Length: 234
Length: 234
DNA sequence: GCGGAAGTTTGCGCTCGCGCAAACTGCCCG
DNA sequence: CGGGCAGTTTGCGCGAGCGCAAACTTCCGC
Image (cartoon, rainbow over all chains, first blue to last red; front, side, top):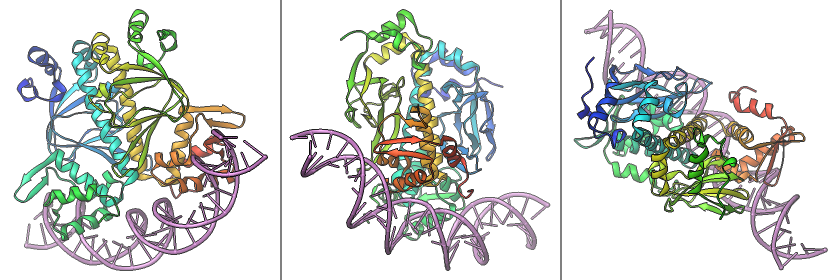
């Protein structure tokens, strides 16, 4: 397996303050792998043997409750690290990571973490920032779940997905990976039925255009408005 | 202002791997302050000038939505760090920290962080673990909000508070700081009315004993059972 | 010891969104 | 090209819990 070309990753936030030979040394410890759509990168509860960086594609992180229900925690976009359980002191992965689309990832063995972080303290700082911004996202989600109605939550979720992984398309912004009503339901704490009803409504109103696992925001601004307006205020 | 006695804090997770002169040096950069009950340590949106460690008392971290609603993110227990926005690369505090009870905190100026973390990389690692475990808690909360009914969420919340800040008392476990129905409502995404109804029910059933800003779990095991059982299963 | 403020309890009606059920449609695979 | 499956749409009825309103209780300051 060939070594990873540093030029692919130099500009990522994860490697801020690292370059040249340092970066090359870090990359030498990694291998890359391809995951076809719908395959698992790792599973909840599994021994946290590695940590990852997504090069291309999209990865869905989801948690399963004791009762067997699934909740989607986030979608990982290219350039982001994920499965950093070892750095947070966890022995097992707290969630399952599934390729939402064909994906290529870099993989470091967890055992390399202590050594790398000792030699390159910038890694700890950068990881801390990455984890910190995830904590903010998670807080935002708790706040939304606590205070917003379902329709508003769905709007917020679509806006976030579009910002993070939107692709400009003829008339609007398309979410750049296959995503089902069920997935959105599991991100917003509702049922696929309710999501379907809401999206149908928006499609009628010309706000979006959608199909099987595909959503195009035709009028992003009006979706943003839905996301931000107070519940009663129409 | 006297220097902080290292013996007070040596055993905290935050200072794992640090001792003697190193620890003393870190503490020399801090000052301590006392916050009376209901006073704010810092406010959401304020410039993140400092980061903190709680020595005694309890601090409530809450976020206010644009619409003016409050959501309680967590209660900080003694020994924990909080307000670590600077370490996560934030310029402003994302939440408001209020003393839930008379509290004593250590305060470091944010400006000291880069220097300290460079000189003592263990700080970054320890902070990463602290932030990581908060991320896990936050995820747990998202999952609960997504899949559980209100009664179950309240049960989970009380169990968590009792584990984190419970005090063994004559018959049961008392939550060790003043907490209102309103606070619990803001932690569980419901209204104080609903919380009041639920707690009244539990009090009738002998599961708890409660008063003004005071809750004693009489039968912790049965509350745990409520928290864990599937909604339908009675 | 009194008055008021803060916190808590309780009632009632209504609505959002779930649960259940069934039909529909685009896609993949044989 | 046809069968079947995965994903989606839609209808209908019901119930958890919210919104509003009002009474009650405990605590604190004066």
